[in-house]
Length: 211
Image (cartoon, rainbow, N blue to C red; front, top):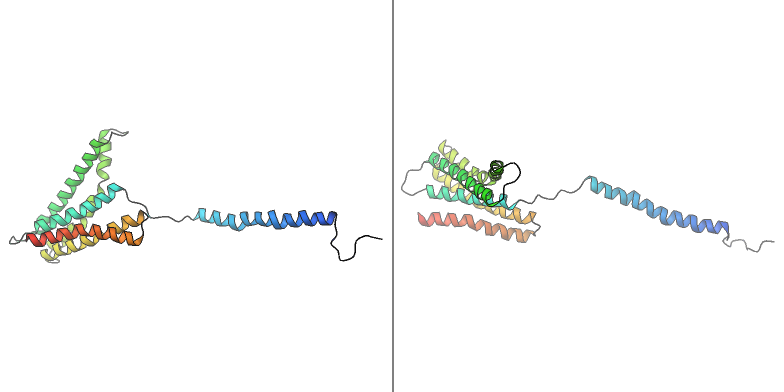
């Protein structure tokens, strides 16, 4: 007659199978499936489609953009003299010439301050000059506005006023963008944009007072 009472859980091989089998199925099996299945799939999915953060601008690119914007505003304001007939074409040429000269001077300063890289000093100077494209690009809105005035699409005084206002907001946007891609909060980014905006407002105020 068997010692076990009906209804009691069997011990021996069935119990061992239950311990190892169930534990193996519920423990390592399920956990392993979770890691390799859902968790593994999630990791591989995230790795296959990574989030692309904003690219942080280099200091040189940010310097060129801010410097070019302030330079264009200053030239437009300086060439807009009271009592002198406006000449948008003349102002346009001076804005472009000044931008190219400033870019070349800045590139030359970098080329002589840094050791020459592989490829010779001439190639290094050329690369340094090409890296100054943000400075020249920042003056193009001003040049475009003066070109529109030269083509009589609007008045020259309106062109200068529009350039000054546009460059003020451009400086604000550059400050916010640089702060955000550096990881700062929106509040800190807005403060940085406001500080950059003061550069453009200074040019506007100086232009008003000098006139």
